[in-house]
Amino acid sequence: MVIAGRQFSTKDRILGAAEELFAQHGFSGTSLRQVTALADVNIAAVNYHFGSKDNLVHEVFRRRMDVMSRQRLDRLRAALEARPGELEPILAAFVEPALDLALDRQGHSFIRVIARAYAEHNENLRGFLSERYGHVQREFARALAACLPRLDKETLYWRLDFLGGALTYAMADFGLIKRPAGVDEAAHRRRAAAELIRFAAAGFQA
Image (tube, rainbow, N blue to C red; front, side):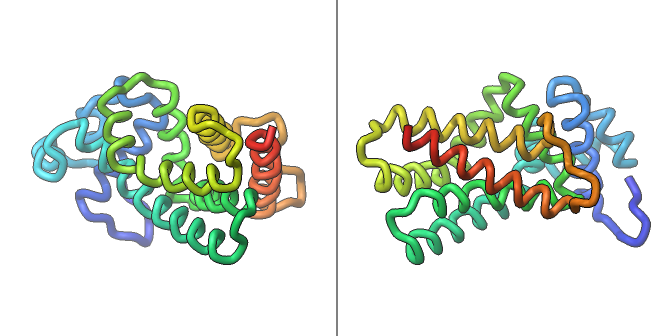
C-alpha cells in the first residue's frame, strides 16, 4: 500500500491494509493473506509486529481509539469544570471527538470498522474493547448520573449504549440526510453533532 508523498513503516502499511480490509469484509471475512497482499509484506512481518490476527485487530482499534478516548476525557473534564451540572456539554464531549475522527481522511475506513464491530459477534474484540476503554464509558456514566439522579444505573447504561449506536450511524454517514450542495463536510458534521446532542439530551431526560 503506497500513498504518494508519504513514507510508511512496514507496521503502518500492515495496519492501513488491515483497516481497509476489515472495513470492506469484516473481521472474520478478512484473511492474513489478504492483508499481506495489500500491504505488500510477507506473513513473517505480520507475525513479527502483531503475533496473531486478534492482536492485529486490537492494534487497528488502539491506534485510533486511544487518541479519541483521551480527547473525550479531556473534553469531559473541561465541560465539568466550565459548566457543572449541564447535560449537553457532557454529551458534546462524547460525540464531537468521534465525529472529528470521521472528518479525518485517514480515519474514514475506521468508521466502517467500528460499524463492523457493532454488527459482528466477536467476543474477543468485545472483551478487548471493554477492558481497554471501559473506563471511558464509566467516566461518562458517572458524569451523566450526576446530572440525572432520577435515572437508575441500568437505564442510564441502556441510554448510553443507544447513544453509541446512534453515533456510529452518524459517523458512517448511513443516514437519509445527505450533505446539501454547497455545504462543506465539516459544516455538515457539525450540524450532525448538534442534532445528535439535542436528540440524546431529550432521550436521557425522558
